[in-house]
Image (cartoon, rainbow, N blue to C red; front, side, top):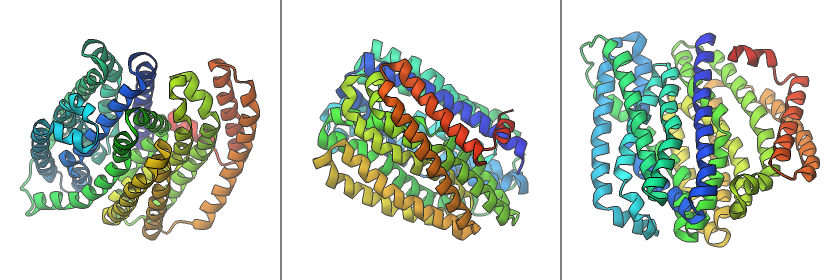
Length: 487
């Protein structure tokens, strides 16, 4: 593996996701504390969830399919790459056009299906949102196929930096949750211009176009089928629960749930950046018959992710109460137990983020699609069962239960493909849990001294210092190696 290239890509993606988290964090605080009521924030969360579900039909797995074939052909036969990109983008544009028309014609019907008629004014902008989000995502994923994630980071950062400005302006000048949606559309439109512009000028236009292989378009479309199935299941897990909470428990409960999911997303940046950056390497090592190297690479990634996320989840469970009430306001106190349940989900999601794309590049998208489809269907059923009695907390419990099964299946497939060292990984898990336990004891004892935001930050920093000291002293964290990556 090109260590220097990996470090540059990882730093770029982590930087972009940090910018996104910072921007989104500022935006959430502004919206929840100053601009929107919990009900309006819930309507915004429900609308974004509906857009996410509809966006699946504008995607159809074509971006990841294109990235897979770009990775395969860019060294072996670069003349095929323009054909891959044209084919994938053509399918994408046709799908976007169909979804745009459907959203425009059936806005009221979609709101009624979601059992939230109040969503209709927000859904008017759904077609535009889906179009610009889909196209910006296409560029981000294709850059991954080129193993040039720096440009993925640039595209993401363009949308993230503008998000706060456009959404706040939208709320002020258009009003309420509708204005916020308008701001999201403007932000993703800017990201689309940046991403597709760079993709054309720096990549597509540099390839000499060769004679297209027979059946290439068909292969690009065919490989997108299992990816579509997987993405469809991801969509159910990521968005349908928010829609169900809003439709069954009401918009205010959806606001609590959306806030909890947003907080959990704040801590995903390292795993997401690592998984996005490193995944193409698995495909390259498999193509070079270097399965043992790929196995050691995955094991190392898995160990470091657990070392970071298990203690972080434990800490989030402990500090959820003061964080929610002091940062977002006492009006969101009912979101506290939802945040605590989602703390467990952050560990599961971190493992997923370093595993899912790896399976795609290892050619095991079909198995992942089957597992995701089954667990997503179970998640949907559990949501229907638990939300009426437990509200937003029930939806969170359903997500954690079903995602646990999905993670175990993913790990089994990776082990089958790469023959991981299970005893070594289990020993590492034991050490990590011990570190989390000691750190949690320190944080729990310190919480009695929290009286405001400053003291809360101090307790969080104390917990981080205890974690860093124990991780370094145990030898699980090599500070010098980490610093070399960021050097």
